[in-house]
Amino acid sequence: MFSFERFFGIFANYYDLILYSLCTTLILAIFGTVVGLIFGIFLAYGKNIKIKEIDKTYIKILKKACIWLCTIYSVVFRGTPMMVQALIFFFLCSNLGLNWNNVMVGQPINQVINGNLICGLIVITLNTAAYMGEIVRSGLNGVDLGQVEGARSLGMSSARTSLTIILPQALRNALPTIGNELIVNIKDSSVLNVIAVTDLYYRLTLTIATTTYAFMESYLILAIIYLVLTLVASSVLKLIEKKLDGVKFSLNPFRFLRRKIL
Image 1 (cartoon, rainbow, N blue to C red):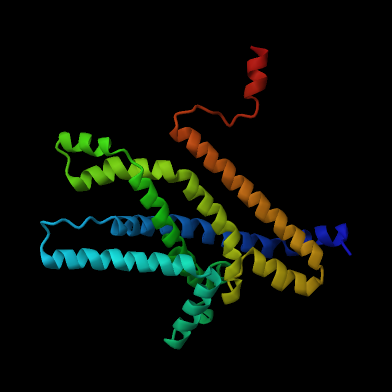
Image 2 (image 1 turned 30 degrees about the vertical axis):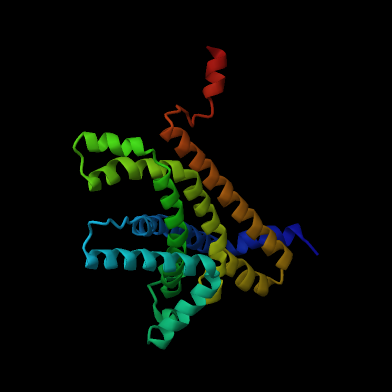
């Protein structure tokens, strides 16, 4: 039966573990999204390679190989659950002699940064890159060709046009979807508990709940924290979009009162 005493008691007695697990979840989500986006850009360009008739035979073979590798990567990582990917990667490393459980850092840093977290970061980054590749690719294809023609008319090279004209616009157009991927990573990072990554889900369900037997209270706290994180992330992303659109805004909570007085 739900008890407010146990609910607030968890915060009072296990605030340090909750804080450590919160840091772990944020590191997983932010690192996975940012680095996954970087890898996704390369993946998008790899799938967008154009094979020209004037290319030599070996160039055509290399381009086709690159396209196929990027396509297979995208299909595999988008078509399998991240939980399964984490288990395969974890036990594959164990078979090769690398046991992530034995990778330790000095206390109290080890509560957050340890071998299991590093393993989780690799998995969530590889998984996110597959989705980011498709997001960036759709953004690249959505840029008006007139932008490219205008840059070429100014004498800009293909590489410079792509990096300074096309890519920034593609990322801006894809920003809402990229932000949505960050929110997804905040929640989906919980599946990495299968390889003992001590995130919010692991701490509150497998550590605190099983110790205190306050399962309902622990699950409710978990839901509240995830909800707050997603709401904060959504608000920050909206502010970034407004800033990029040139909309002026202020974070001063008294700005409306000041206008009323004036």
